[in-house]
Image (cartoon, rainbow, N blue to C red; front, side, top):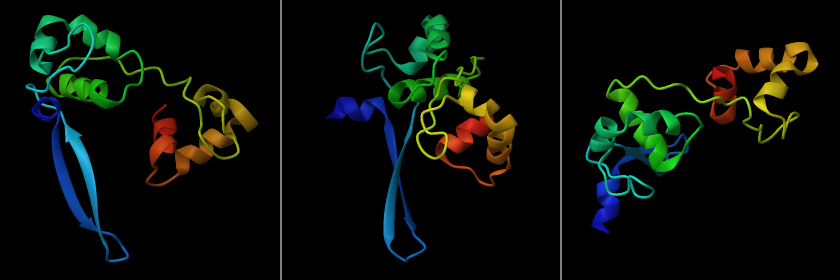
Length: 134
């Protein structure tokens, strides 16, 4: 529907994989005209929300967010609002030797050897990148 299109602007990137097949990746970009889809600010544009209630954005920034809330935070940061980084110490490791441990727990296991390993990973992806940033 047009409402969904107003919420996020989608950009399609087409690239060739190393096997020569075409693949597509969709990424979302928030703009000031993007709309909040739910909650007490439903229907407001990101720009209007940024101006009217920066305290709400600081509340949203306290935890790691995804979807439209992550897009809202990205827009707010790009607009110059100084927002705190979320505390991700409770994030659980999804796979591997330390699966199920929080970042906080994993940072200190084995005398810090896991943290050293993660820090040295070149071009990290997913949770490893998040753990490095933690």
